[in-house]
Image 1 (tube, rainbow, N blue to C red):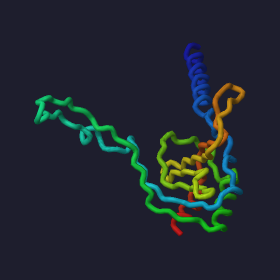
Image 2: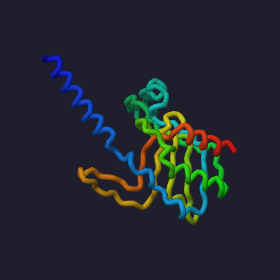
Image 3: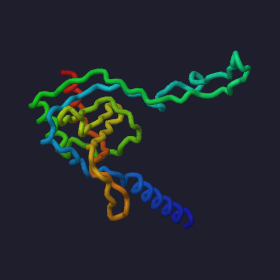
Length: 187
């Protein structure tokens, strides 16, 4: 009897934790405004963050003695920073933009799987207005995570008093959508 109660409590706790973890903004994939873009580019990105950096031993700076004052500095570890390089960039044709926008508006382009927590991405699609990026789509081909964001929005509070940014979406992409993005960048 006690095992059943513990099992029931464990299941309830897991469901509550799961609900809180996935109560982030995964519902509104209609963030982008497609009619306002002057041009669209797709870029292949090299992104290395602290999680993928070298072990601490290579970032160790040993103690040093100053040649003038004779003071000794304490040893420390160098802080690794995110490294982001744009490997290639391609401006999309009008037909490619229409196809991409229709995929971004199609619910089947998104997977119902959970979203990876890493910020890693290797494809970035930028929407320009008057030469300035006003919205972007970032995709990780490793984790299938997609981040869609638009500038210039103020956050609002939902019925649970949780802050929501109406111009931000996190989700997972389907394999079909991933193949389309890989083809776009390759052409």
